[in-house]
Image (cartoon, rainbow, N blue to C red; front, side):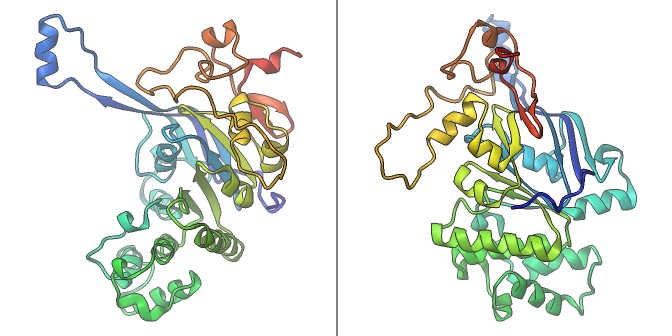
Length: 339
């Protein structure tokens, strides 16, 4: 997709965003410490300092293994989870300092679509209420207009408005995800965070939903933060791609640059695992080792225990995300070798 349509002014700007989950010691652990157990409060570094800008009208893909913090970052952007540190700005204004109409504009303007449509839809509510309750509560439409408003949204996402009286369990997985999309659209957002929005669907249904996302983007001038573990899916929908590893962005570039000129060893390893239609034989090379625990992240570069190019500096010093080419950023000490 072309990025020419996007503006230079970011609609979302993240600066030093961190999110830590703290599990305090329970009574048994505190008693054990009195006896010299030496137990410590557990801190999960889910997001460990993310700087990112999202331009109006673009699709920014965020890719990484399960546990890298991409879904948590999506929840921070959508306001579900407040960051522990750092600043999130929406249309140039700090979300933490928003009040009144500004805060309402942000809360309505950034919506989220979740991975599991069955789990994210209330099984006791009819579709008319799942989709139509929030716009009535926020006075975007009146109660009298609700039925027509829901019908228009259902047609927009490819559902028969006659199904508005049904419950979620009466739909297929793809239809339930369309309901989730309609629910997000109901508040007339500018930004939609798609958290693995097609991962639970069959491949043929995935294509239909991805085409729907593309059409809605054109019709409504939407901005997407598209979170996925699947580089193949991201390549079809994104203008730019951010690669996350253990709470940090390690590479950020246009989709073409990521797929044709990947710089970071982690990105290169992910691409080697991507299935292709090539007929020649190739050796399958999975990424060595397991993703480290965010409870105790490695020192220096978090990827160094699994990196085939790791050197002593990687263990001692964390590389900064910096520009290596126009519009292409990477966090790897190997980029200093030729400097």
